[in-house]
Amino acid sequence: MRIVLLGPPGSGKGTQAALLKDRLGVPHISTGDLLRAAVKDGTPLGIKAKAAMDAGELVSDELMLGLIEERMGAADIKAGYLLDGYPRNLAQARALDELLNRVGLPVEKALALIVDEEQIVQRIARRAQEEGRSDDTEEVVRNRLAVYREQTAPVTGYYADQRLLVEVDGVGSIDEINQRLTAALD
Ligand code: AMP
Image (cartoon, rainbow, N blue to C red; front, top):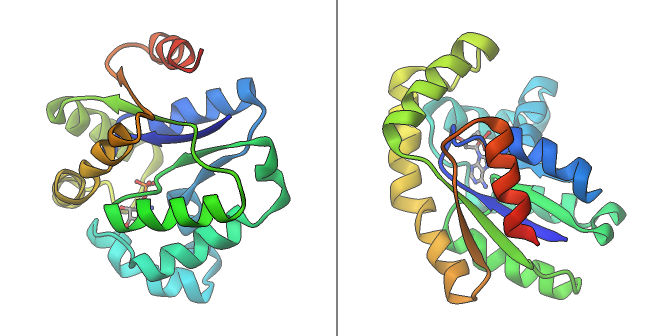
């Protein structure tokens, strides 16, 4: 299956994607993970992306398109994919469509996890303690949520217009949410 996973930061996308990819047998492609690896390795991309990431802003569409084009060019996506963290705005959604249509592997379903902001602030505070991510401070989290509201939320409408969107309640235990997502894929 070819899936895009949508939802605000801290909505549990990463956790759920890790569970779903095993069940579906497709690669989990997280642009956040790819960027964090690039920052850690000090690659040219990592050096350019770090300031935006630390501020909770989006990395430029141009840099992201280069990254996603490279990753989606790998042979393993022929089996399908679970995209997590991309697209983050309408320009990225359109660029992704173009890229995937070119290789004949268009998105089949967009799954959106619905979680309210109060829950998210609590979850991210917990993650900050557990993982120590540099972009999980309260100020940066607030900015990431604002960026989500303004730039990323419209992406759900983009997929709704294509009749690919399925919204899933993202509040509950990891297991419950996993079951809802699995049901949404059937
Ligand atoms: P995430 O782990 O998906 O929350 O991503 C962490 C950070 O990486 C985000 O706050 C952005 O700074 C950057 N990032 C990840 N994916 C994208 C994307 N598709 N477009 C722009 N920036 C991104």
